Length: 255
Image (cartoon, rainbow, N blue to C red; front, side):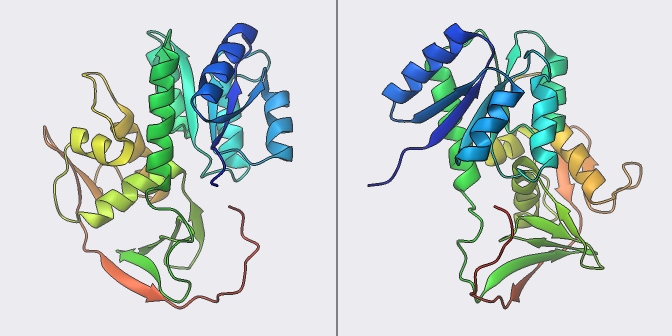
């Protein structure tokens, strides 16, 4: 029998932690809870977690700093759903910049949180690393770059690895699957995050900005990701799928 997904709720409000733990567990999930960054790290050090629900307003290190730390420590593929105060657009923007996969404004209903959790997990697992046959792993080459679809990272012309967050990987993968085709922000948001945009949603613009930095793409004269005014974005270079022979022996690479 498949084990339930393990969710870590990080919030300094004990009442919210209890409410979410009870609701999510009744919905078939396994739940751990933490009140701050120290407790969060303690949980992550002793058990595997499938997704972190992380409040922005925390004592000591806030949620933005903790999200940035998770990404810096190699947890690029651990989904993070951030909880922000209603109307705090700055928190949402910074959360996405730090590598969060989604955000939800307080107050919210537990039912909506559950739906967001399931959507993020579906997106994360839509292209799971390591599921391709070991002897025929796809690499997508474009310009001076290659995207390793097993390791979920970029390689530059010298073979140097550039790590990507889960959200960055999904956006780049979508662009590479639709080269030289204009994709609207709404379409990109639907393909990468499984939801519709609200009138002030800037998450795709932020992700594009982050990807351009990874690709060392000059925003004034971009070579790879170009902005089409009033329409969206386009990957302006051709893409060549490649097959890389890989050893079937286990590796020591982090998940």
